[in-house]
Length: 405
Ligand SMILES: Cc1cc2nc3c(=O)[nH]c(=O)nc-3n(C[C@H](O)[C@H](O)[C@H](O)COP(=O)(O)OP(=O)(O)OC[C@H]3O[C@@H](n4cnc5c(N)ncnc54)[C@H](O)[C@@H]3O)c2cc1C
Image (tube, rainbow, N blue to C red; front, top):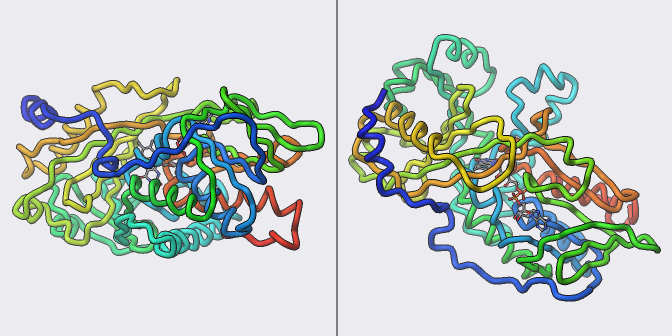
């Protein structure tokens, strides 16, 4: 175990703020005032709502798309995450056993979505600091080594070769899949998507918390805020781990918290002492999922998930940060003395099936998506496309019958 004083020193000057928001120039969007009409109303301006907005305008540039956000663009999980854009659509370590018939198709769709994500980010001119590094799973004990060895895909590392790839005394084996993950800067992705959406003609209102969704006489759906409403034929609810607007979705969820920290930028010598020349996203096989990666300016970002959390909120206990700093120092003892610059946390929307889930309500006029289980950076693009397909597929199949994803 690392020395407690060294751990305390590493946290002694850490800011409680999200690293990804540093240097981002926020664009302010006016709150909704009064009543208006739209073709599609989207609730929630995280990755899911923003992808839905962009995709809706790409399908039909004449559609009036209104996006309502209770806080600021990307104030939820979408700017708090680790930036691991994975092809996996949920926490499906045991997916092959749980969905034996669908598993191959889910893997294929997830990989296609990841390619589509990279393509869209490029086409939309978003500088999201993409690094196509793949993901390296590491094992700490004999059982994890055995399980990792059984995996079918990727480059295998034994104890010696994993330590020459990334110098950690606690790594005993590893497996690197290059095709299943790209790293992104999620703050730049969120603000870039908002910019792209508004350029396509989407109307965004921040500080506009939706308080209710009702079907009106004539079939339009009214989405209400404290200071106005939007009537539209279709609604997409993209509120993730926040309080669901549909009663049915309240029974589906169990939130967890993920805690993240970044170090100061490493010097060239510090980085050389770790290796990590291929800059992979790193994930362990422990029960408390740990992830780590390098940022564009060579900080190490490390993260740990804690289950379960009974209530959603943004006041987080200090202990997980201390335990994360301790794990970090056990993993990279050669970095003793390096301090953490930022720490933050966020709520993960997890369903009991640990897999993203789409549904329809209000006579199929309202679509909702839930339960990314910490895999929504890429998955949100796919799920947004599925929401639009559900909404539009039935109403105007000839004009809007095909959809991304
Ligand atoms: C700490 C953390 C680390 C993570 N790390 C990763 C990772 O590395 N890789 C990965 O793939 N996934 C990760 N995830 C998950 C990923 O971030 C999410 O799955 C993804 O961002 C979901 O996007 P979203 O748009 O659905 O939700 P959010 O980004 O949470 O957006 C929902 C939005 O809805 C708004 N809202 C809520 N209620 C209302 C209302 N009533 N009216 C109006 N607006 C409302 C909120 O303000 C919020 O902006 C992580 C999540 C967290 C919290």
